[in-house]
Length: 195
Image (tube, rainbow, N blue to C red; front, side, top):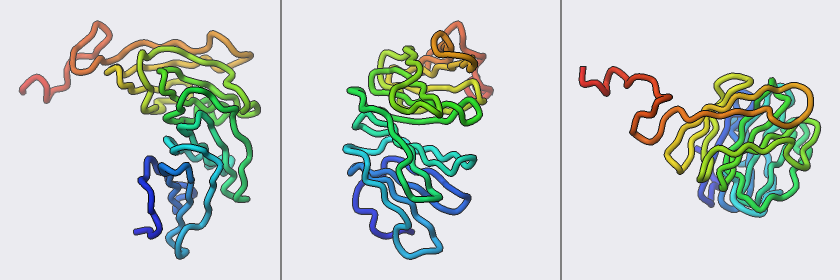
């Protein structure tokens, strides 16, 4: 167990197969290494709660989303902030790496997905609508497909065609709506049929 966790923890992510990154209500990202006493690294760049973390072993980068509307990129090898997005008026709630590390997808409070390209962090390369309420979780299915979960009760599958310039890359379709079946839903699981 790690000491000095004085604020509520909103998210965590394993890094480098041994370290654990945490994001808290105070906007601080901390890196914990069980081989050391206390916190190994601290990043204070966010002005509001940290909502999502995702680690890229290819670059040694930790991506963090925040309620302050920013996406920050930290280099865990040097302990420095590499870059960050411009602040959005929308809370950013979750983050996932797609496109073989070339893109980062971020879910927002207003139900949008913001797609950032690896070499251009300032503004999203593309913004995809789809949910009527907040996108709270993103699950990577493949390098070109994700599932999103929202407060609107929908799970959506989003497919990216990641080549060339921006625009019209993403399509989405609802998979499941709360507990009701839709025309796009697969048959119920065996346990739901009452065996």
